[in-house]
Image (cartoon, rainbow, N blue to C red; front, top):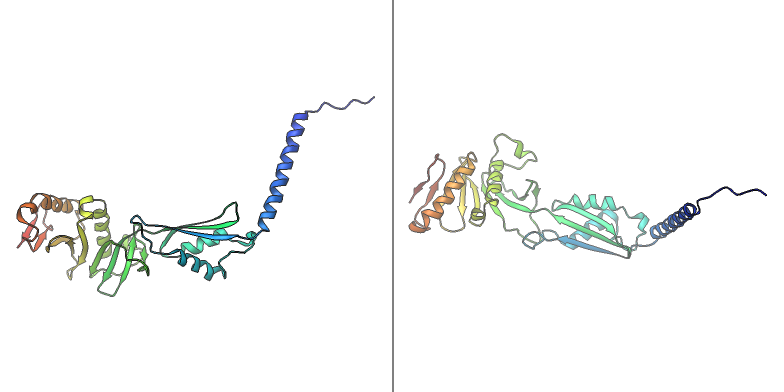
Length: 257
């Protein structure tokens, strides 16, 4: 009588179980790829203030133009998820796009918007936003963001403007970044004007005075002097006492009535 070799029946059973699971997974995946998209859900995440520069309808329209349909009823195997994300991220208002399918074969498109921090209305007819990274964005058709405004002789935008040695848009953007980081100034300054001499002039929300900043050098010191003046002197002299507040001179705040 021939004896059977010793076998680890537990291991055999476990391998068999894994093979069954793998087969079910393959069949399920194949079946899923051969099924149709049951719907498309679009979400545009609002900006910090709750508003949107691009609508869900705009997202659907972008998909329609690039893929020839809104994708509902398309075989899942034919959905190019990565290309959808790339297509949506080409929009100047979109910072990031995420496309994925849920368990019910519904396609989800989630869009993160760029956050505008400055609107430029220059003497050359320029009208655009800059986002937090200094990227250019066109005006939105559905909403005007409440951000700082730059006017006057602002140098034309180029993608490398922040790398330029001397560039008025670079100076403006540096001032915007500094103002946004300061709670007091962020709610107080509404406009940055570049005058004919290429100097920066701040326009406050309250009062009629113009704040002569000059250039963006020693910016932290200039803004600190401005805050100190407004907090300590203005309550006594009044908001309409001075026509100009000059911060160009080291360690001084020179006012003119």
